[in-house]
Image 1: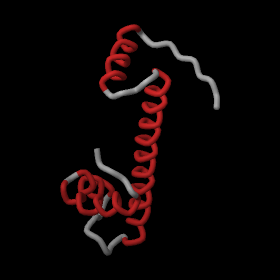
Image 2 (image 1 turned 60 degrees about the horizontal axis):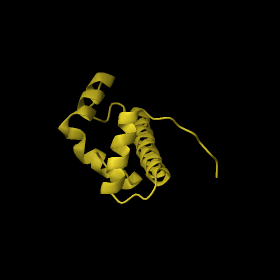
Image 3 (image 1 turned 45 degrees about the vertical axis):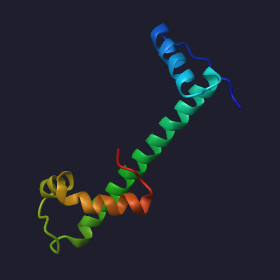
Amino acid sequence: MENVSIKLETPVARRMEKRMGEFNYSTKTEFIRDAIRGKLKELDEQAAKKKAWAALFAMRGAFKGKGKFKTDAEFYEWRNNEGSKELMEYYEKKFGLKEK
């Protein structure tokens, strides 16, 4: 285990102490470790989602002319609209992701 030293602004430290009692953390170290684990998990999910979208975008070239997208702009518009919700649910399930 490595030691890491941090300094917090007083208001942040007070908010942390308030939440520690509310959620039954016994030490500041325990609270900070749990917060770091949560953030790392969130970043891992974002990276997996980014990787899934990159794979999907790369595959779109394999089906060029066979799909409904003629340009990159059409694909991005579809991806960002409700039409892609079903596909996102599929990839979230496949890669074990959760939408936040």
